[in-house]
Amino acid sequence: MIFVTNSKTTLWQWQKWRYVALLLLLVFCLPCVWADEGRLQIKPARCIALHEGQVCYQTLNINWQTAVQGDYCVYLQDSKTALMCWENSNGSQLKYDFESNSTKKFTLQNSRTGEIVAEFSLEVAWVYNAGSRRESRWRIF
Amino acid sequence: MQTILTGLYLSILWLLAVSATAGDLSSDVRKGASDPHADESNYIEMGFSLGMLHTPFYGAPEDTDPNKTNYSFSLDLNLHLQYKGWFMESFSQSLEEFTLGYNFADGERWSLDAVSLEQHPEIGERQSSDLAGLKTRESDYMLGLRATRYYEKYIVQLHALTDMSDTHNGQVFSLKLARHWQYRNWNFHIIQSESYRTHRVADYYLSVAEQDASEKFPEFQAQAGFIHTLEVGATYPLSQKWVFRSLLRYVQLDSQWRNSPVIAAEHGDFFINSLSYVF
Picture 1 (spheres, one colour):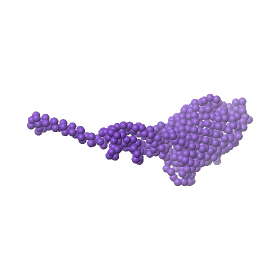
Picture 2 (picture 1 turned 90 degrees about the vertical axis):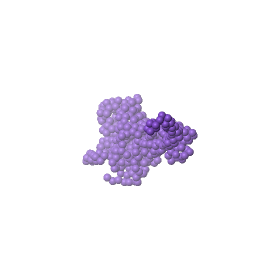
Picture 3 (picture 1 turned 180 degrees about the horizontal axis):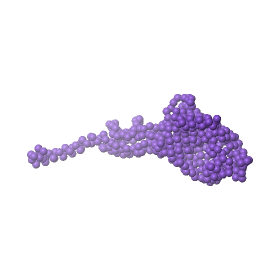
Picture 4 (picture 1 turned 45 degrees about the horizontal axis):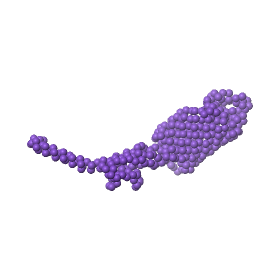
């Protein structure tokens, strides 16, 4: 408000520097924030087995996207080997034949830093629950 | 006295509600059960079945022609309910009927139950107009032991039943061997069953006495005999609540029963597909 009241030149200079600052912010700072952001989407999101404890099988369509290009890998929980890796990419997809008897987490990681940029939990569900196992027993009425 | 005891026994079963551990073999093998506790949770299913059959029994189901392919549609109710040792179970595609029982012993891989069930339905004009003129054979109610052994992908089950309804006072013994496989989320199974009916059972349901004989239902004397059954099937979970089942069953009756007036063919087959909702 002070600049506006002082002179037109001062106002113009202030506005110019404001636009420059905004541009610099867009160029340098926002990618720094988005670098940690990514999206990992898996369809279908659930694998249904008939009975609790059975291995569930499902062909998955895995899609991922990130805000910036980079080197990324998709991992399945408890596995040190990546399902697939990409170089200098900001998104891709793959098909994966999933088989597990429990819910598993998929992660999208920056392969240079090891940073997890997105994750997805694939639920393994079933129709019939299993009973609890017990030792041998005899009953009387 | 026997009638009173029978009624008392049934009343207790009904009042205490029901079921325990090892379940109906047909139901267990479809789930890929490898121990008696696989069927331990309570559930109720409702659904429907579409079937094709060649029946070996004259006039049963009603309006079926043993020389033709017959089509059927039915509503299904499958359930397994248990409370402590008591249980009730019904599975529309089972080799057994609605069963009430008590599990009095079980282990990691075996189970021993007392079971009661209707083994033979009524045969007569009330069930089928084709049987008009045939002296009605009443349904029975049998009581006995059911022993089940699980070994990895195999299940062996033995039934030893005796009539408790004073209908024929006969016995039925059956031995079933089942195996299951899993391919992806499909569950396949096969069941081989050998079932033996004593003379009293066969005579009551399949014989026609001289005084009851007619041109349509001539005199016949049935001896004890076997029923051989082979079944293959598949089960697939369409979702967490919907289950698809398919089944092909072949039944071979004892050859000496072929001339019984209530037997239309020595063998029959049954192909059925069903869809069930699990509550």
